[in-house]
Image 1 (cartoon, rainbow, N blue to C red):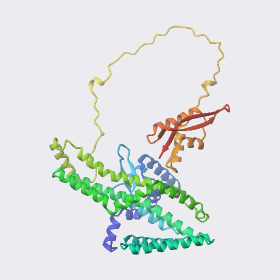
Image 2: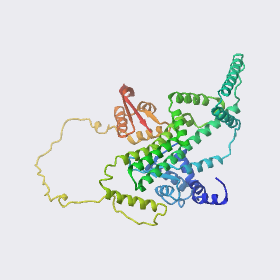
Image 3: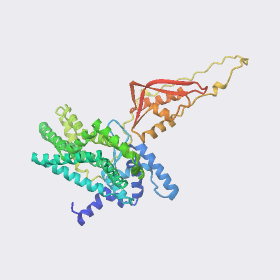
Image 4: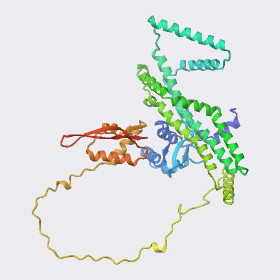
Length: 480
């Protein structure tokens, strides 16, 4: 893309990343979105949770800067950041949910990454990047070589170098990387891992744009159904066979290999044990970055699956010919909606009092019923003589379920899942069996919780009398 005046002026007015950096509220927007999404590597967050986080941030800023700063509510700010003229957040409704969710847009991710690059680094490594360039060039040359003799000579040369290195190690010559080389390579690994997480949002957005173009083609189609299906299936093959589609499929297949996951976990554990790496105070989440890649890749896979879902809905529409008039009306509405997409009407042009009409039938109103007059029998109540302990009325056990739910959310911020036995080990039972039942109640109310009947685990606690108790139950896993 040429960086001439016209191009840059257009980007300054239309690109969400540039608009974010040029906004007077850029410090608030960038710091909060980095805190809520990038730092904990959260892909999607419900509106209620995001509003609560932003309210806490706004409260702290108003305490330090004055009550007059940022006068709007958290919900209004989030809706404004997700508006079409901003495009810093993506607001959507997941399938099967009536609650709005938010996610970062690729443009916002780029702006936050650029802001992070402005900070001065104490150590800038160049050797590892130079070695990466050489290695990539070598792979391209060797992978494009069609002469068998040439490839055999190169492989024999590398085998001779490996044999020579084995002999030197056997002789006691073991060249080791110094601390500077280790820090250089670790910074390259950390930067590449973070860039991969950022790239997932851009890849997902590109697939979403392709899916949107197919939906628009279906909405505007006025020809035969067979011709449309041929066109859509060709588009689906083009998506899968594109450079981006093949690269993502190769990455996903590589990451889904159990052997590769175990190897990557072992390598990360060994690297974090090096003294030179520990001196950099690395982010501990890098140890589980491959699990973050898996989670981000799953979101991308779901986006790609939306295209197939749209095709299935179109193929299952048996009423397309039977209700021709209805389909024509809907087709006209869709055509007009797409025509005015870029020119939205200003102000309020349609108001709905309620999402559904309220119907009250005459016979639903209750008839008059005379009150029942109680008949009180005159009877003298005598005082009892039994001496009964009243302590049982006050020795009631109250389990704070909100506190237990808070422990679950806090644990899932650092891990993708945790078992009930691990939670009880971290937070021992204070109220015995009643508290264990409260844990199980929270697990049954959460649709994401997994109950593994084939695997048993035990939970132990000590009663107030000092007696040790133990319960055996199926494994319960809370999932993020």
